[in-house]
Length: 56
Image (cartoon, rainbow, N blue to C red; front, side, top):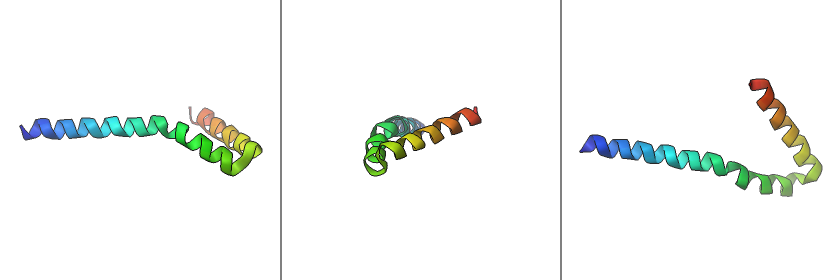
């Protein structure tokens, strides 16, 4: 029984982590647009896209 409990805990941890990573954009975008403004957010978005294209 302890193996099943450990397995369930690990699966739950992976699920919670995936949820947080997927919701990161939803939480981060309003914060960035409010603090950086439109032009700052545009620059930030271009840098993120450039980094993602370079790493692929």
